Amino acid sequence: MSRHESQALDPAVVDQAIHWQVRLRFNKADEQTQRTFELWLQQRPEHRLAWQRVESLGDEFASMPPQLARQTLDGSRHGLRRRESLKLLGLLATVGAAAWLGRDYTPVPAMLAQQRSSTGEQRRVQLDDGSLVQLNSDSAVDSDFDAQRRLLILRRGEVIVNVGADEHAAHARPFWVQTRDGIIRAQSPRFLARERDDGTLLAVQGGTVTVFPGASQTLAASSSRSAQTANQLLFTSSGAREFRDNGLDVWGWNDGVISARNMRLGDFIAELSRYRPGVLRCAEEVADLRVSGTFQLADNDQVLTLVAQSLHLRVDYRTRYWVTLTAAS
Image 1 (cartoon, rainbow, N blue to C red):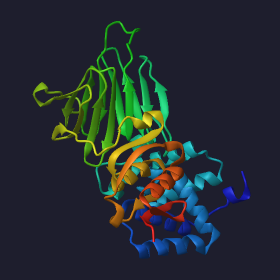
Image 2: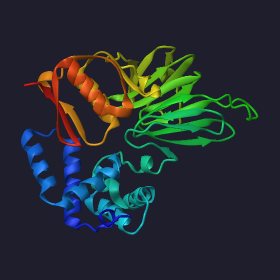
Image 3: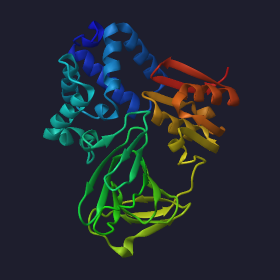
């Protein structure tokens, strides 16, 4: 470990970095806020180091109280690996994070999930029944199998599931997926589930998937809704409806691409931002421009360059973690 990496940080500086991450990620920042953040970042080397450490801990870190987060950062000075630090943060959070956060959802289950991916990472996981689960960027799942059923719990993000044949079971076990908005039962060999701000998106390739909105364990057939091949549903705890796509190929990330067809630039940038840390946005005056094409997710800076060239825009890098597309002057 280098001297720079092991450097102890002033708790006040760490608190400032946490404050900036929360402010930049979860609030709409104006030009003055951008300039103030940039000034803070350049003031002292310790500011930049604290910011880098905060970013390295992922999205769940921004939701935690500064005191808890600071203890996790302190762990890096004592030789704790990143995963151990995150688990420490999760354990500390169970004591009282829900009260501090003042909301129902906390990131602790996702942080401690059996399988999780970081921002910009896709992972493939083979389950005991032969099923293949593909995790998109910043996603987390748990699995809970018994003699009667197979259950996958989507803790955060997005997955594609290729349901296994369950050949070694004494009898065929149904495959269920638990989400924050309800329960899914899969009769399909392949489906996609994604948490969105407005609900959970379900897409199907082959067969049928049945959704029970709002259900946790008690399932009522009268409240179910089925999605068949090529269909997409958006469901919340109160119901389900057909989902009209915004021009995005929802399956594209499985091939390492983001594929758009006449998609609003604002929507395209919001989608691309899922694959990189920090703030990525476009100016309001260009948000309604249209994007079409297939782009490699492995180099999203190149994606920005190509989109900017095709639409005659400028990519403004205030920092590596703050990027804006604006109209070319």
